[in-house]
Length: 308
Image (cartoon, rainbow, N blue to C red; front, side, top):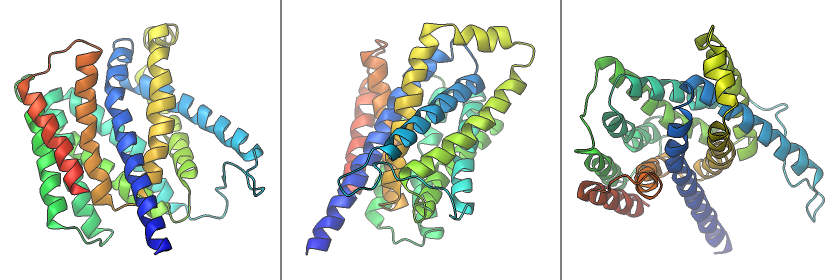
């Protein structure tokens, strides 16, 4: 009985962690929008993950020196002697493949269309949960995963022209697969690595990749795309949120939660991001809140709740 109660408590903690992580991502669009008025995506992401990696290093260094009552360090961290395949694949899918595919998908489609395609992540999560993790997925989870996508589609109707291209659709579908695979390999690598270790490797590889990419893309334009951005306070306000909150805290929460619940349950929370981003636009940027968005938001919230 005691083990059953403890298991349920851990499950509830995992659900709350994944919910909070995706809610944090909902506000990231607001800060990304502000920063992208100053520079290009690769520079923003390079600085974002470099700062996040620095912050996480500080957390690890300080946490290892602070001892708990039983004498063990507050932060347990060790990458030695552990299998590398799953954690490297985790880092490849997120943040490397996902952010590249999402950004280029948005370039070649409208943001409304991109939002609908990205909303398919819960369905991809259900499919991969069955095919890769061999988990049992209930009909209820499948139905409400589909309903959450419908909710996202409704929120975008009438928002803007739903334009797309084959190239854009391909990039967005790659982003969907990458996001679902993030949950797969977060769960797999969770057998050997704790949430901080997984997040640490993700940020290390992400910062290296995007620094190299930004250096290549900004060649000959470092003054306007890099140094000019770094000199503006607005850019750093965005970076503080995107690095500390939307990277360090959000990914720690997702890595913690995704290793303790099924992929199909974890991925359905992805569409909560849409609800939070709409609310942020209304409350902060003064954007309109249409009846369609209200209906869509309610459908998403109800679907996520009933799927759990």
